[in-house]
Every structure is written in C-alpha cells, then in structure tokens.
Length: 109
Image (cartoon, rainbow, N blue to C red; front, top):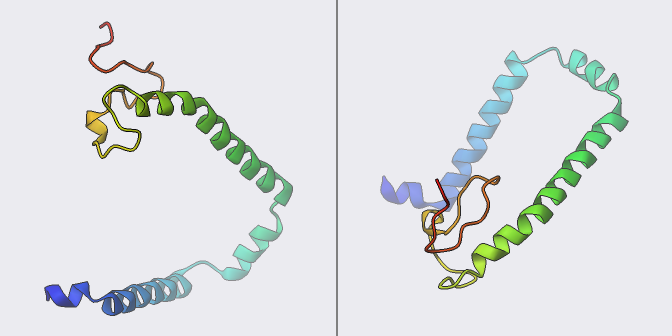
C-alpha cells in the first residue's frame, strides 16, 4: 500500500477523480446557475477592481514596513543570512507590533 501512495500517476488520478466528483456534486446540488449569472451581471466591477488594487497596495505597504525588521533579524550576529534555523530559534517575537529584540537580550517585562 505504501508504494501505491508514492506513485505520482496514481496520486494524480486520485486528485483528478476527487475534483471531478466535487464538480459533479456542486453542479448537481448547487444553486440555480442562471441566478448566479444574474448576480454577476449586477456586480459593479470597478469596485471589485478598486478593492483588489487596495489589497495589493496593502501588501506592498506591509512588506515595505516589515523590511527593516526582516533584514535586522537576518543580519543578527551569529546568524547566517539564510540559516536553517527554526522560527522558534529566531531572536524576535512573532507579534508584528513588538519591537525587534537583540540576540541575548530580553525585553523589559
């Protein structure tokens, strides 16, 4: 059984069969598709585009804001820039609102 699960062809066939079954059940038990088409005709697409653009700008702003913190951790003494450390070994908190903490020092409690 273990060798059967490792076969990429059998896994691909299983995924295709599962997707086909899911599609068939959604089509069979799903909504009236003409109502779905009418709902999409009523959408104001410029607002959808505006929401997507705003979301992408938010991602860019977050990445720019997090950039100094990410680089500070990667260049900390004793750590290689691309070291294979686990996140629990890193000298920083997972809370993005916490300030970065130097290795070997603890934040005041």
